Length: 162
Image (cartoon, rainbow, N blue to C red; front, side, top):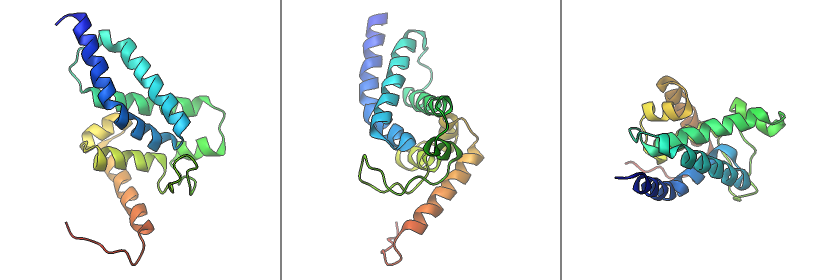
């Protein structure tokens, strides 16, 4: 393969990952405009770095990790507002998201770990690499997320066995 075919493969793979990246960015930022901006930055960085990548690591893990890193950097760059400080601390988010109309039940960190493991199917090790933390921290975060979700579940909701 030549450099052009590697570049086109990278672009094709990047386009295929866009919905997953956007969903992850929405979980982190809890704002559609900021999520789209974050995904745009991640894609731009990925395309600029593509010629220097050896292709050994998984593209999805690399892009999830870049998304998380850019989000954290963006939060630290901005003047600490209540929303940014709460997101960085992992405090519970606001009760409703105006962008999606859906209630935001979990903090960004809890929701991100839950999304990576429960929705994306990543192992604790892979999620820890993406979130730049340890496997034990991911396990604790998932436990906290599941507890929060269990509390939010209506008492009379029917629980189904798997």
